[in-house]
Image (tube, rainbow, N blue to C red; front, side):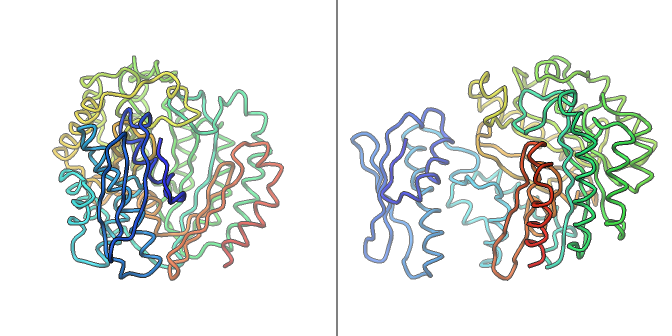
Length: 457
């Protein structure tokens, strides 16, 4: 628990506290004082006082607030690191997008590494960020008018134990399907005039392949008039037990260029533990079924799933590499409110996670993959990260645009969050559609009107 004389800082400081196991039980107080031309962060932990003098006041008011937050978090990180005897891989960084901070620093200087070292980021992760920025060359494009289109299909065969999304087993939500597809068609038709330069289309979930073939085709038919430039087109097909040749043929017919096979693990024991109704053999069959269609393939793995050993995770990495998908993303388990595993899982051993992530970096690099995007989330086990790896010239445009927030994102469907970039003002406006399907359906006309207003600016 932390209390601060700057109340607006308390949520930011609590993000640092949560990085350290057991720190939430500590009583910490914080104050910021002006000392000459510098700010000084003062903390009290028990009977001990800590003081950290940070930066010169000779900056704009907006910059002052930004630096107050940055260095208050760094000061608290130093305190907890010293008190608990622990360094973390991303130091005091709690933000979702470390690469975005790197790009901002590169606008001021020719090297972001000194800032990251000051924030106690490990040398391995500084090198990782450098590699990601290199991997984004040729894809990263910050230009007014660029837009990505996202279509939400929040339907799954079952709900995985680690999942915090609003998806429910399709047996319980299928009754909404006809009305939901009609609402998507209306949203997509209304979206057409709002799109200038379409960079990519991404149909995600949920598990889009949980739809019947004719239902999936209705969605792709509605997208077709908006995608006239042959841009990247991804369908997050999902679990192998939903794959059919008919669905793959429909994707090919409508110009889909990339599909996702969300493996998460190649261990049958782990798949059963997280609530999947398929085996590793089903994953191999899904890859084989998709191969004749020549899609680029994304494959996801998760480090830290239920009681999975290092050896089991290593076998999953090796299996994914052997199948040679164009992209492999390695996620770190993130337990949010709403996920069954959050109630059942204690903190994972950080040494185990570090070994898992280290193995994936080594093996993917050796296999010719390069990291091209990364992001972090609150409540990530071990304060680690998610990293997308790609074969040369096979980076997913949608992932780069979304993670770096460098293009508008026009999102349709329940629980879809649209983002409008105002580049000259360096700000983003968001519009989130209702999370649950019935509320989304009830408010569809209002949603269309409000998004038209946002993107007409």
